[in-house]
Image 1 (cartoon, protein in one colour):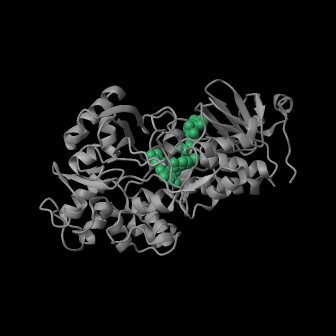
Image 2: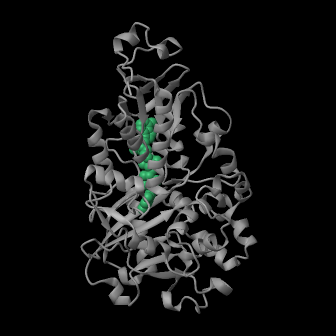
Image 3: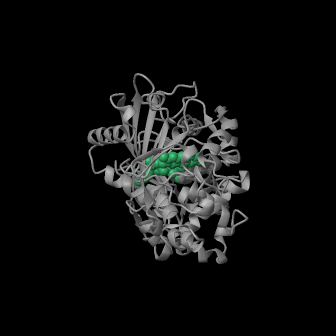
Length: 483
Ligand SMILES: Cc1cc2nc3c(=O)[nH]c(=O)nc-3n(C[C@H](O)[C@H](O)[C@H](O)COP(=O)(O)OP(=O)(O)OC[C@H]3O[C@@H](n4cnc5c(N)ncnc54)[C@H](O)[C@@H]3O)c2cc1C
């Protein structure tokens, strides 16, 4: 493929059509395609386009690449603050690892087994089914609290194919999760436990459609999300792989492959997309022009960027309104005698309180000297009102309250909140009831010469693989137009 290379001089002389058609700037730099955001979506789009001979510039606001793939190299034990599990079906991620010689090792995010803190009482997994605090009914009773939602999604999902959720008939499932669960007979006890779990918002604030999409992906591969009562995270941990040395090493390798096409500390503030070209301005004042632009940032970030010829209709509503739920974390080191040997219970704790889970990650070397408290959704937003130092202290005291055997044995090593994290503004997209059917088709349509990628524009995949999928789709769209 032959691609034209426009020059700064040409732009300045008015030979560059984008500048003639509206933007009055002469660009500092000119490329064929500008990609905004160096997460997996942006980096994959850039690698595909560069591989086809296009001159790409990747503008990344942060001082590091990877976005929500973030290995906490600065925290004791280097916990993964974002993505870690690479599913067996992650073809794009696995291909790029092979291409760039990034090593994968089986097993990811493996935690010690869980004990359950419900109504202030610690309950061993083996006692859960018959425990008086278990007020679920019938087939729900043997299911551990964190497996209930997956079991309902697996048992009652109407979907058998990956793209079922995109079909017109699927619109009937763009309803509150709580209503759908009640319609399938979920007991009040089960609803309460599911509400305390890892859903992005309360059960009535989230559409079941997107959760069914995710559940279908897992089920088609491994029968996950069934009603066997096994912990699906535990199963995923054993069948998934992780990047040796930390997930961040993969986007770093992708960026290294792209060389000086990737510009760090380049926060895009303004995108002007016209019939004939695109101009982009960063907060540092640098200006870039290109034939096309791909936005590969979460919508929570894109809504902070001014788009000239503003978006309209459902696309504008999606960018401005689609929620991005929180995931707030406190990392701790365990000192002294193992607290789980002292109280004789499993080392990880699921709670129905302010903390969703207190995981004990088992290090790849077998070490068991860390805890990670995870606080999601609205609970995460509440906890984030505390300053990081106080937040860490508060969570440590809360763990000591729930598990008295941890008293005096914990030390906070790091605090991380995805809602507070600059440029990402949340852990994962979600849909409010009624949003999915309005947004999923319109929001990915090109807007003049601006195309859209990012995990929130996924079609068939989930997680990192969905970000790669979205970058690939946007790159193919642009390649078709570059000619
Ligand atoms: C806690 C957590 C656990 C997860 N666990 C897993 C897992 O185990 N397995 C899995 O597959 N997935 C997991 N995920 C999901 C996975 O991390 C994401 O789906 C994926 O990384 C998203 O990639 P992305 O490229 O779409 O977006 P991001 O990774 O969010 O990348 C967007 C990039 O755009 C940049 N940016 C934003 N605004 C601007 C701007 N104005 N100008 C320039 N740059 C900008 C950001 O700095 C960022 O680098 C997890 C996510 C989280 C948060």
